[in-house]
Amino acid sequence: MTHRLRGAVCAATLAALFASTAAIADSAPIKIGVIAENQAVAGSSIPLAAQLAADEINAKGGVDGRKIELVTYDDHSSSAEAVRAFQRAVNDDHVVAVIASYTSEVVLALEPWAARLKTLMITPGAASDVITANIGKDYDANKYTFHGYLTSSSIARLTCDAAKDMLVTGLKMKTTVVMSEDAAWTKPLDAAYLKCLPEIGLKVLDEIRFSPDTTDFTPIFNKIEGLKPDVILTGISHVGVQPTVQWKSQQVPIPMFGVSSQATNSTFAKDTNGATEGVLYQAVSGPGVAVSEKTLPFVDAFVKKYGNTPSYAGYTSYDDVYIIADAIKRAGSTDGDKLVAAMEATDYVGTIGRVQFLPKGDVHVHGLKTGEGFITGLFLQWQDGKQTNMWPEKLANGKVKFPAFVKIGQAN
Image (tube, rainbow, N blue to C red; front, side):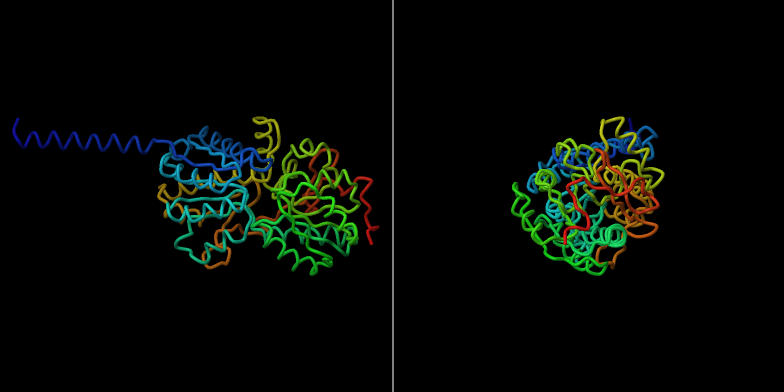
């Protein structure tokens, strides 16, 4: 064999090898990491809903013929474990994007790692305004992080919108006490509460912040009862079900209205031994509420597969898989920078409404757009062991009612 012929054979062999390698790469699964608090009431829905979305996408041929493969990690509500999981996901498991956590402290710990590893990350449930504020302060470094849920200040504004209609106009309430756990996500929540509540006609008599490790709420409820507000505005999530259980057991005559992450999950009634009756809570979606044409089919599929309805973070993690898959398809790549550009151009109708991200230059860049035509949120109440939507009126499927121990209009 001549040198020229050997060269031609080698070149052909190499070309075939490269073509084969490229073909394998083009057909390899697209790996997405999911880091969540799998044992928490609100966090448990995250990996389940994400898997449901991946299964649906794969059943329709995947993304340009490539299957979505989820790699899941339980961070056990630990920032340190979440960071280790993120590093393992990118460096060892070769994921191209990560859906991470409903805990703000966890997401804030992961944000610098998304920047260092240039890997797209979206949170389906963390709310702290600091997450998006960090992107605004250093866009080039932190552009890889996206907010798939509402910021705390957005939640507060939507809560105030609902409170104006339901409490001030509807029930003629005039006073409130803000009761929130002391956490990263509630600092901007309470700050926004203290600003918007007086604007809608609710005088704030006190702001009570308590440790998420609190187990006895007797002194807190006693103090609130002494102030005689018309309503308690809540910001509770990581403290679990104790505030609700003791509100019922102590027959606190004042209704609770606001944010209660566990209340979004259909297991809340069981988890509180039925203490849920009358609790009003903010959410982006809920069972039986057609926020979009995709909401109810998702809930039905989730119930069929898992036996219960999802928490608020389930709706968003389901949407997030679709949003990432859509971005990969439009980008024609899984490169981090190209994915960021595609994510920024997202215009997707999901289970919680129309999803678009705030643009570069906004103080909360990569946060969700809210308001008419985008994400407006709901207000639901637990009635007869079920979640029933009360607000906005056009999507309501029930009327507000409270257990006998709650005395409306008699607090003052």
